[in-house]
Length: 418
Image (tube, rainbow, N blue to C red):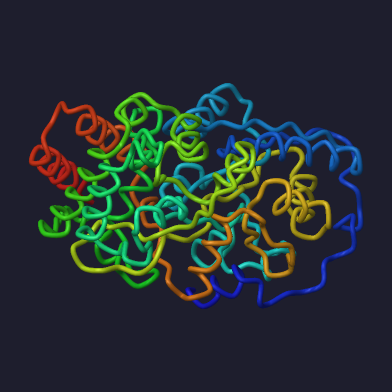
């Protein structure tokens, strides 16, 4: 898996692009509704959908829901109850797949399957079209670190981050920043904590695909040392974050603080490249590993962030399949994914490369084989959203101590035992 992922990320298995137009036959009338969970690509996806609609005679309606915990899942449930399910919808992993398994089409025979190593599979069959390859660590402003005399290559564990954060905190006025790190822990931004930060506990320092820490927690078995060090990491991030952004900030305020040079670090991923471009952020930036352990770790978290499923009960299955196939097979689809949306393509035939510095950093880590898995989606959305998010939020707002955070996390895992 790891080798295949790296090959596709760095584009070593390049194949000639299909001729523009994709599949031979046009979709031919009707309407497709696509619901997706990445609001940052909404405008770009709508622009591409308009181009595809005109070429294929089938209207494509894009509904982007994100920025709040469980947005797509809740909306899908509402649409299902109303008898208005979309033709294509996104899901993030195995637990969400299980919720909609009865409605998800088998895509194993689709032409793009042979061109990706990260399609969503279950029992040997393909059910999910990978939207992109994404990664995150701690994004840093390299220019500011250089001014502070901090080597980003040293940021590999708790001790190194603690020393760096302490030093940078004394230089905030000199650097012109409001905080050392831009971190969000409001309920609205719960995916930053209960998805992305949580994954540090699950996979940091472990071989790609290693589910040992994840399975132990799913079984209610808590490694006190690992959890304790992780709590130190969360405390460190919260301590050196801007309290307004941390407790009440939204996506734009969190990402904007880093993009405008008001924070040295950002707890987000390469999907923020369009935000950096919009803010005219020209400083050098890249990713360092998360420092959630005392021992050194040398990698960042890389995987497919989400997948498109096709509703098998749709009246437009053929058109929906063609829409997805054309993303991979046509120059217009490739341009949308890489040039317009700034995504790292999940398909080996796509020769375009993203221009954003954070995406380039993800590719560099992947090319070096220094990647850790995304294991957070092995836990249900309800557990992450209804149980974990409030615990992080209480810690961030000072309602509970670190000891109480550890205790609540431990009790949550035991109660969630499978």
